[in-house]
Amino acid sequence: MTVPELEPLLVQARDLNLETAVTGVLLYSDGNFMQYFEGSEESTRVTYERIRASRRHEGIIEILNERIAQRSFSDWQMGFAQPTRSELLALSTARWLGMAGQAPGSSAISPGLALLQSFWKRVRR
Ligand SMILES: Cc1cc2nc3c(=O)[nH]c(=O)nc-3n(C[C@H](O)[C@H](O)[C@H](O)COP(=O)(O)O)c2cc1C
Image (cartoon, rainbow, N blue to C red; front, side, top):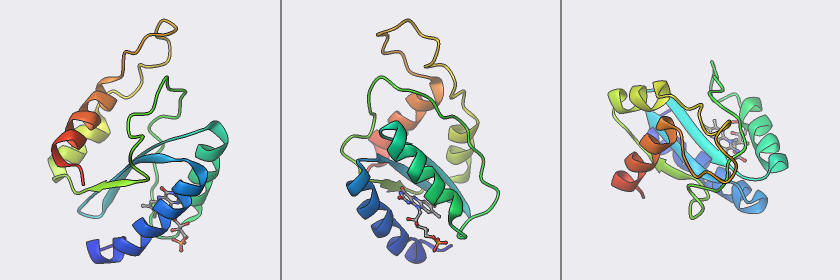
């Protein structure tokens, strides 16, 4: 997909996410997407089913699906950014596992999420 083609998809996704109280970010680089989204168990399940059913992509890989203590992108119905190929590679190969198994109440986050948060702080729009 080209970036102009992505615009209607993003508008639709944000509408749906507003309804279901899903928040997150969508990254796009050179034909590859990476998406992080958060919400209730039910909303994220329905959202993931919808994304999986879309014919606009192929080769989907689920990196992680786990409970989180709090949202990281609560202000974003679906933020969008275009990282470089090397940034996307770094984000997608970072260690994402790590929040589960922490002491209850711990606010520690995985290296993957920490990297995504700092990337987003730099580029958000
Ligand atoms: C890259 C990508 C990201 C998407 N993100 C969301 C999302 O955040 N929330 C959502 O409800 N649907 C999301 N969708 C699904 C679309 O909103 C829409 O339901 C789907 O694209 C329609 O199916 P179609 O692409 O086969 O026409 C996403 C789809 C794609 C391809």
